[in-house]
Length: 343
Image (tube, rainbow, N blue to C red; front, side, top):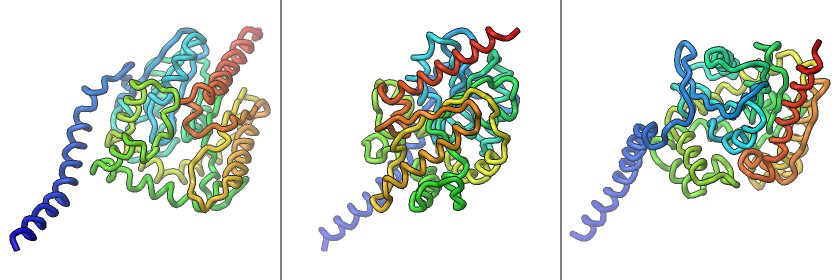
């Protein structure tokens, strides 16, 4: 029957055409990223590649902002600009993210800290440093402290990753087991989903809250952020970092403590979304335990819990980000006071 043949051809065209259109769209959008979304800042050669660095403000100590897994320096823009009246504040994209050169096969936090170490010298960024790490950025911050103990004068961890949060050992605590497998599965499929188009569509429509809610970020910043994290190299790097999570966590867990380093741990009350089968009280209790353990890394550690906040609202929402800004200001003042009292 002619109409059945036409219907079959039409369905075949949709089945084949839609994925092809998605792939072609992604190829064009990814290739034109540098022109569509111009870099704000500079590229710094660190020897075997260049990293994107954005600095505002003047003075010392220098605040270094480190983004989390699957993130970008753009995540820090709101917090960074509000701290510009205080001192020199710098954010950067790790290798493979944002406007930095593509990542490497070795995506462990130890390797990223090595890159940051070289970036500090190549830029150069004046020391002492106040290092601020969000999420997986906490691993990089702790690795950097181990590499440069004389230069890192204070630390702020914002919903910082803990080595045991995804570990079966659960010492001192871990997130509920049903949350672990979906985490690793998500980052396994991200590169493929990003190249076929569904990921971008899901982020644009808000169906897939990869970065949480926009909060109080302006439209330009939100666009720059979403475009930077949807780059194919960024998705590849995020997938590689997730695959290297256990190796990174094991190495960080064996680092020495922070002694009497000024440390503020700021964390959300309800950081992550989860399936209905997970008890929210279990998530909250585990996260509080893990964040308290991070604060105990230093004899001068403090923990600040932000009620109602989520993992990303601590950077994007005016109300929830206020404690983060206060923590950084406190750290800077502490470093300056110690400098002024030094003989």
